[in-house]
Amino acid sequence: MPRFLLFNAKNQESSCSNIALLIKNGARLETLSKRQYKMLLVVSEVYRQQQWMFENNKQRIEERIVSLSQPYIRPIVRGKAGKNTECGAKISASCFEGYVFLDRISWNNFNESGDLLLACRSF
Image (cartoon, rainbow, N blue to C red; front, top):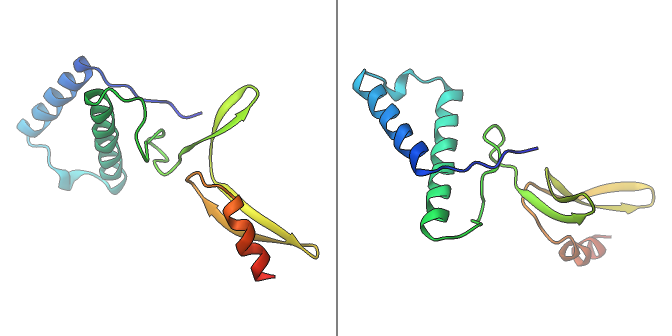
Protein backbone atom coordinates (compact mmCIF):
# COMPACT_ATOMS: atom_id res chain seq x y z
CA MET A 1 0.00 0.00 0.00
CA PRO A 2 1.54 3.34 -0.99
CA ARG A 3 2.21 5.90 1.67
CA PHE A 4 0.87 9.38 1.05
CA LEU A 5 3.45 11.98 1.97
CA LEU A 6 2.63 15.17 3.79
CA PHE A 7 5.12 17.92 4.44
CA ASN A 8 4.66 20.61 7.03
CA ALA A 9 6.61 23.81 7.59
CA LYS A 10 8.87 22.18 10.19
CA ASN A 11 9.86 19.36 7.79
CA GLN A 12 10.50 21.85 4.98
CA GLU A 13 12.67 24.04 7.19
CA SER A 14 14.71 21.12 8.54
CA SER A 15 15.12 19.58 5.04
CA CYS A 16 16.38 22.86 3.61
CA SER A 17 18.81 23.37 6.49
CA ASN A 18 20.05 19.76 6.15
CA ILE A 19 20.68 20.22 2.44
CA ALA A 20 22.42 23.54 3.06
CA LEU A 21 24.61 21.85 5.69
CA LEU A 22 25.51 19.04 3.27
CA ILE A 23 26.46 21.52 0.55
CA LYS A 24 28.48 23.56 3.04
CA ASN A 25 30.41 20.42 3.94
CA GLY A 26 31.22 19.70 0.29
CA ALA A 27 28.41 17.39 -0.85
CA ARG A 28 28.06 17.24 -4.65
CA LEU A 29 25.54 15.69 -7.02
CA GLU A 30 28.35 13.88 -8.83
CA THR A 31 28.96 11.70 -5.76
CA LEU A 32 25.42 10.29 -5.83
CA SER A 33 24.76 6.89 -7.36
CA LYS A 34 22.17 6.64 -10.17
CA ARG A 35 19.64 5.27 -7.67
CA GLN A 36 20.27 8.09 -5.19
CA TYR A 37 20.06 10.72 -7.93
CA LYS A 38 16.76 9.27 -9.19
CA MET A 39 15.38 9.26 -5.64
CA LEU A 40 16.47 12.89 -5.21
CA LEU A 41 14.55 13.83 -8.38
CA VAL A 42 11.44 11.95 -7.20
CA VAL A 43 11.55 13.53 -3.74
CA SER A 44 12.01 16.97 -5.33
CA GLU A 45 8.90 16.40 -7.46
CA VAL A 46 6.89 15.18 -4.44
CA TYR A 47 7.95 18.32 -2.58
CA ARG A 48 6.91 20.51 -5.53
CA GLN A 49 3.51 18.79 -5.71
CA GLN A 50 2.91 19.08 -1.97
CA GLN A 51 3.97 22.74 -1.99
CA TRP A 52 1.59 23.51 -4.89
CA MET A 53 -1.34 21.77 -3.17
CA PHE A 54 -0.64 23.66 0.06
CA GLU A 55 -0.31 27.05 -1.63
CA ASN A 56 -3.46 26.52 -3.73
CA ASN A 57 -5.46 24.88 -0.92
CA LYS A 58 -6.11 21.80 -3.09
CA GLN A 59 -6.37 18.11 -2.19
CA ARG A 60 -5.37 16.72 -5.58
CA ILE A 61 -2.92 17.31 -8.40
CA GLU A 62 -2.46 15.69 -11.81
CA GLU A 63 0.13 12.89 -11.99
CA ARG A 64 0.50 12.88 -8.20
CA ILE A 65 3.34 10.69 -6.94
CA VAL A 66 2.13 8.26 -4.27
CA SER A 67 5.14 5.91 -4.11
CA LEU A 68 8.79 6.94 -3.88
CA SER A 69 10.05 3.57 -5.07
CA GLN A 70 7.56 3.39 -7.97
CA PRO A 71 6.78 7.00 -8.95
CA TYR A 72 4.98 5.93 -12.15
CA ILE A 73 2.13 4.25 -10.19
CA ARG A 74 -1.14 6.15 -9.98
CA PRO A 75 -4.12 5.41 -7.73
CA ILE A 76 -7.22 4.27 -9.62
CA VAL A 77 -10.65 4.77 -8.05
CA ARG A 78 -12.49 1.44 -8.15
CA GLY A 79 -15.39 1.96 -5.74
CA LYS A 80 -15.14 -1.58 -4.38
CA ALA A 81 -16.29 -2.44 -0.89
CA GLY A 82 -13.39 -2.12 1.53
CA LYS A 83 -11.10 -0.36 -0.95
CA ASN A 84 -11.91 2.91 -2.65
CA THR A 85 -8.69 3.00 -4.64
CA GLU A 86 -6.15 0.55 -5.99
CA CYS A 87 -2.69 1.02 -7.45
CA GLY A 88 -1.15 -0.82 -10.36
CA ALA A 89 -1.38 -1.20 -14.09
CA LYS A 90 -4.78 -1.24 -15.78
CA ILE A 91 -5.30 -3.35 -18.88
CA SER A 92 -7.88 -3.55 -21.60
CA ALA A 93 -8.07 -7.01 -23.16
CA SER A 94 -10.32 -8.74 -25.69
CA CYS A 95 -11.00 -12.41 -26.37
CA PHE A 96 -11.53 -13.74 -29.90
CA GLU A 97 -11.85 -17.43 -30.79
CA GLY A 98 -10.08 -18.51 -27.62
CA TYR A 99 -7.21 -16.04 -27.95
CA VAL A 100 -6.79 -13.13 -25.57
CA PHE A 101 -5.42 -9.89 -26.98
CA LEU A 102 -3.96 -7.12 -24.86
CA ASP A 103 -5.38 -3.91 -26.32
CA ARG A 104 -3.94 -1.42 -23.86
CA ILE A 105 -1.88 -1.33 -20.68
CA SER A 106 -1.36 1.84 -18.69
CA TRP A 107 -0.29 2.94 -15.22
CA ASN A 108 -2.76 5.83 -15.56
CA ASN A 109 -6.50 5.51 -15.31
CA PHE A 110 -8.46 5.25 -18.57
CA ASN A 111 -11.98 4.38 -19.67
CA GLU A 112 -11.85 1.05 -21.47
CA SER A 113 -15.15 1.73 -23.27
CA GLY A 114 -13.12 3.89 -25.67
CA ASP A 115 -11.28 0.75 -26.78
CA LEU A 116 -14.44 -1.16 -27.70
CA LEU A 117 -14.97 0.43 -31.12
CA LEU A 118 -11.30 0.03 -32.04
CA ALA A 119 -11.31 -3.63 -30.94
CA CYS A 120 -14.46 -4.35 -32.98
CA ARG A 121 -13.00 -2.75 -36.11
CA SER A 122 -9.76 -4.73 -35.84
CA PHE A 123 -11.57 -8.10 -36.11
